[in-house]
Length: 488
Image (cartoon, rainbow, N blue to C red; front, side):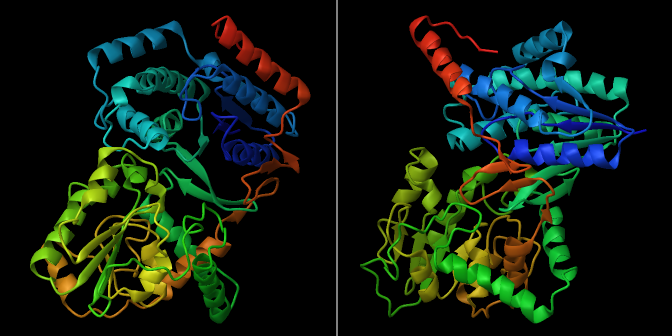
């Protein structure tokens, strides 16, 4: 008999609810004689990755979402709330830990758990504050406190119930990472689930988070190598991804180029000269995903861009450098973005294109002599379109034959100044194929490009008149009586 834990922390604002219901139903079908535990927050904590502002009505809807999801499951299982696992000693332990560790950074550990990195990942994802300027005014200490409580409770639960296998969602952020870390501590396989693409296709990561470069590379290669399609058909499907991207079609993420004007290039550039294009990443997304994504050459992306600009100011003075800021940086007011906007403004051969600019990313790609990236997916697209690509950071395609990667900082100058042939685009086609056909098809879970989430044909984030009425009641009470209530 197996003892299986399925951790479904959040019941609102994420595809996780549908994905983990899929796992729950599958486990009940596959292991009918096993003990299957389904663990949710259900307002055990009033702050989490999807409710950083402690909004009571969000907790209410989250709790309702868990209840409604459970009602869609066939067969019996054990539903537990985090509250069911914790005790007063866990709370005291967490309070004492914070008193001894008032500063939260990535290195902060509680026992075997990098609780600081998990909390910072949640903080940066929500705030976009890569350099943690405002972290002391944020929710982060509440998150750390809860995470220590949860980690202790999980530790005890794993021992008492002799858990054999764990299913989790993503595993990167607080609470979810506590599940992964506890599993690793006891040598138990933790299967982190993620969405590969719309229409119910899932990714499975064993004992690592979805950012793990080796794991992602393996999934891409397996999808290509195990396909029953002929090689020519696979290549056509892979190529279709890049054709759709250049036509601004919505595939599985926000279309960042939709507001750009087709074929528009920046003015004030002498295009008779060789033009190099540097596409930035929104590097806050990778600021707390582990050391694997630490830049091998520079302190951060901005430090690397300064280095490239210096080369164009002293060596490649007869060439242009166009720096296309990632559109996802639009509206971000932190210094790491403001500094980037000001770079190279005193050099006639360097121009920075702001995130909100209508300049066409693909028009820049078309005129580029070489493309420089720090990890952006545009690097894969550039390789497909037969452009030499230089990768100066870490990326999910770091170990594929996509880009030229220097062995050390000194090699960067040679890659910029020497003639480079475009890489063979076979691995780019593999990536395109994976984006179009990758992932394992769910039995009951589904999602679409409009971000709607379904389980067994039921839309999970549609609320009844009664639930909406309760939300209004909670809002009114909190507004006029200043009482933080939660309608059960």
